[in-house]
Length: 174
Image 1 (cartoon, helix red, strand yellow):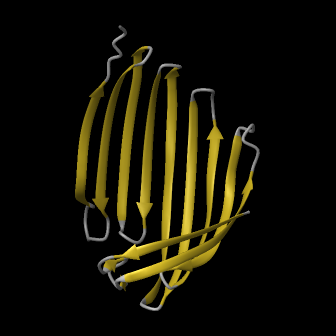
Image 2 (cartoon, helix red, strand yellow; image 1 turned 45 degrees about the vertical axis):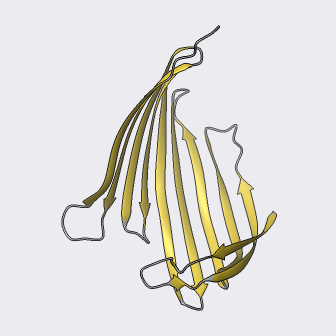
Image 3 (tube, one colour; image 1 turned 180 degrees about the vertical axis):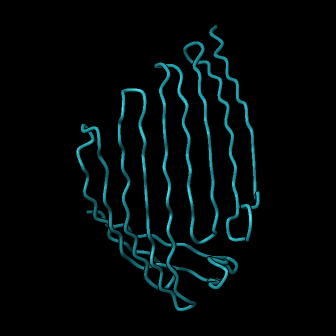
C-alpha cells in the first residue's frame, strides 16, 4: 500500500477530454494505491492494482492488471489493462488503456521489442517496434518505428503520426 500527496498548478485552461476543460488554478492530489504481485519467478506473473484519490477537484479511481508470460527464455509477452473512472465538477468520464508488449531476445546483445496500445479516451492505437544491437561493449545500434492512428473515424484508422529513427552510438576509449 502506498499513499502519494502532490500539488499541480495550471497556468492556463487545460483540455482533459473533449468535454472536460480544467480551469486555471492550483490542485492538490492525494491517492492511495494498493497492489498484489504474483511471483515474478513464475512463467506467468503479474500485478493487480487499485488506486483511489483526489484529482483536479474531483475523484479518480484506477483498477488494472499488468502481466508477464514467459514462453521461452527468449520470448515474453506482457499484457496490460487499466480502467480509470474520473468524476470532476466539470464532468465525468471513464477511460481504458489496453496494451501488450512482446520482447524477443536474439542474444544477450540483441533484442527486438514491440508495443501495441489502445486508448479509449483518444480512440488512438499506437504501435512501436524497437531493435537494439550492441555490436561492441558500450556501442549500440537502435532502429525504432512508431505509428499512431485515430480509430474514432469511419473506415480505416487515420494516421496521426509516424516516425522511423536510427540511432548509432560508438564508444571511444582513450
